[in-house]
Image (tube, rainbow, N blue to C red; front, side, top):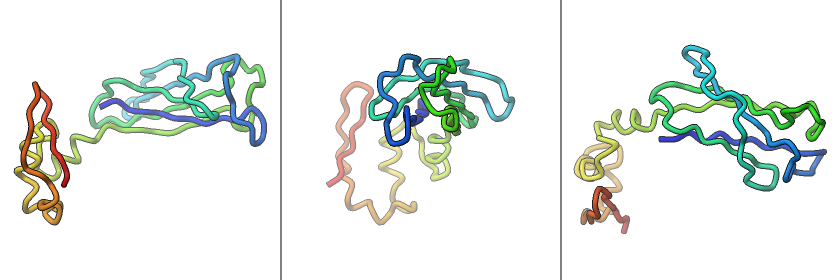
Length: 142
């Protein structure tokens, strides 16, 4: 499961950074080894001052620490006090399912094992008719 890192900048107080001359960049490190896994990669502008970067195929169970730079060349396109944004992300999605005794890659198993779990109260709301199309399994809530 990919990890999404987001950041927001203003070019001045109350004015979102839009179409900047210098595209904001991001650095991402592994928290367990401090190793740099992404070095000054360009972020994608979403709009209204928001930018994103998607870390593809992160190692499951490893936390990542990110620092985004809204003014990578120091040209003054954002105030110096908000130039750097930081945050973290992790890839524990499969672990959450597995803690419930479920296989995160098998929708059929999820349906069969819902009864008796913390989700038992919602069993009646799940349509147990499973439609298969290739490798995709679709569940419909009713």
